[in-house]
Amino acid sequence: MGNGLRLEVPGDSLYAFAPRVVAAWLVAGTGAEIDAVEDARLAIDELVGAFVAAGRAVDVTFEEGDGVVTVEVVPPDQSLEVSLSPLAQRILAVVAAGCGPLPDGRKGYRLSLRAGAMS
Amino acid sequence: MTVALEIPTDDRFVGLVRHLAAQAARRAELSEEQIDDIRVAVSEVVANAFAAQRRAGAADPVRVEIGIDHEIRVAVLDRGDGVDMAVLDLPGTEPDEPTLGLLITRALVDDLRIERREGGGSEVCLIMAREPSA
Amino acid sequence: MHVETSEKDGHYVVTVSGEVDVHTAPDLRAELNRLSSEGAERVTVDLDQVEFIDSTGLSVLLGGHRKAEEEKRQFVVRTTSERTLKLLRISGLLEKLTVEPSPNEAG
Image (cartoon, rainbow over all chains, first blue to last red; front, side, top):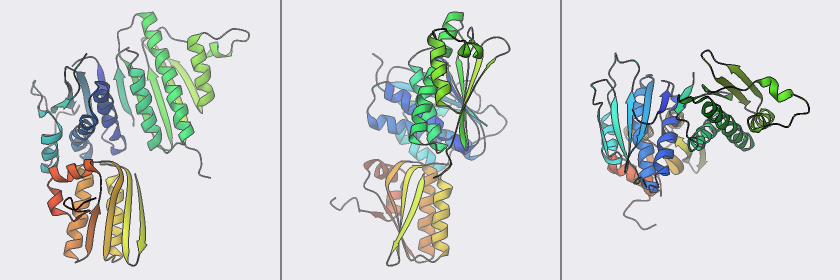
């Protein structure tokens, strides 16, 4: 997907900070306000965190669009399901512009983060 | 175990790698000065990787692998036209841009290695260890 | 993330700083468990220096609250951060936890 920006996150919680750093940097780079940056950090953390908490690695790809950063979170190991806790879902419903399954049917999620408009 | 970031050859992403490496160094409990040094070192190495890829016309992403525990290890992998470690020690020559960056980097970090990759390009690895507590 | 506990007159204040996530939340849980097992009657968790907290961090707070309720001890979460209050609100924890200052009180 997109422009080739991709983060491979191992299933080790030590690296759970990394997706937040990338998402925040991208959203901040669009000129978005601080709330949008903080929402993006939390949204990607909740989604990737669900996999990391289960010890599962994920590949995270980022695509910048107009007013939105689209993120796909895909476990290389497609054999197991990871579900989001009710608390994580509740948070995502507020801080993400959208979160749903991948369009091609692979296990994983597609997340939309509110961002600034592209100039 | 590492976290790996792949970035397109676009100069604005040097800032992202710098920021991610700094955050990783913070988690490895490096000192503020070491974190600043990592920021400079990583910027130099990634900028070199981009330049090498442009010279070679490579369209691949540049790959940055970061590992942390009592130290930070950063590996930057490119498919560019490469630079030889030996060039850093040539006497009497003015350093050109890629080598100046590497000279600076080598002075800042604990360990710096460059290896050729199979299939072309370079892997530059740098290590900075946590200082023992006073 | 750092956790620092101070005590005065039997009131324990746990000051949390940094980022509370899947990696660091267990350290907070361990400290709260330690205080519980040592019979601390009054515990306040101060989140004012927290730069980030997610659902794993919130779960630790909720767990601390529930345990304190069962054991008839006092457990208070303290924050003045709009961001943290927003998260407590959207997660539904604002009503479940004892949060100071109360959002209805002035400053």
